[in-house]
Length: 145
Image (tube, rainbow, N blue to C red; front, top):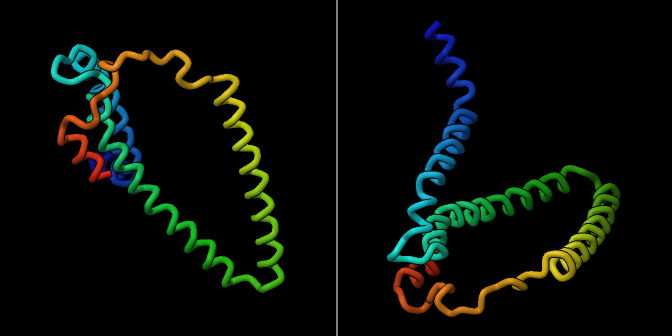
């Protein structure tokens, strides 16, 4: 019984760690929400920025890794196929890229300007915005980004 349990755990270790991370994130979010909302030292927006900083760094590092992997994969694939097939694939990829960019840009403009209307309900008080120039912590976080 114990060998089969450890075998299942070792085969599904990444899934179990991902599930553990999700559960831990939910529990920490529920626990820290009240403390963040009623903080007296920092505003909730500043605390959310501090808490979200490691996640922002992780996503930036992930993007830093993904782009070279995709480019090297495309280059490797193009070296395998012949010249005429590469021309066809290149033309189709360029057409797909242009059409997808046009659709994405149009959708962003329509959603952003017409439906969502960003900053329409923004409070104009100065004390609700974090003071980004007063603390060295902001300079340190900006350097790490």
